[in-house]
Length: 235
Image 1 (spheres, rainbow, N blue to C red):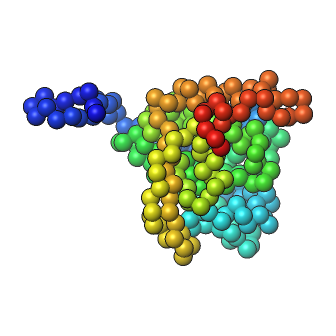
Image 2: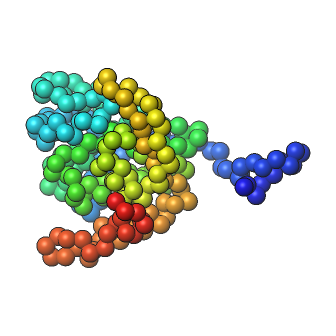
Image 3: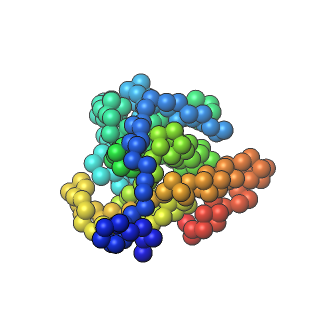
């Protein structure tokens, strides 16, 4: 029950909120320890094709895109995605300069200060790596600390077990499943909803940074502390 009351009716009402709109995402480059994220451009397409070609499984749960049978088809798709304002796409690049995947900020609602991370497409080389986690940290930090969002969403096909595990591991909170929300590639899609709030971000940020620290890994690259354990999830 809310502690706030309408001064006239006495009915419970929400807490006061700074209603200044958040900023829209922009063409930034953000450096991390293990790589960087930067605005997706059409020039990224040929190299991305090389890391995605033959890995149709990365597209299974994308609601509309992929898999692609020809490079020309993929290049046209990336050109369109690179120019879109919502979703707004970023390439993920490792320290050697190799492209490893991309993701987007989408469902952008500056007036409500709500934004979603989505269309997360990781090549096999990026999956289950430190950079894969760091990229999520960098984008969340940008959304909360630079752009000023108060709610950060992660939504996925309810059948996508890997995405659900990832959301919990990164510190998102499961909110429920919207049944028959979409028809995706001619099939039913129930959507699992997750969120992270600005009030939760400081602890999530600390956990990300503890996990990403070099001292959290043994000489052979195995983690010492689990991010899932730090965030209190079972992912």
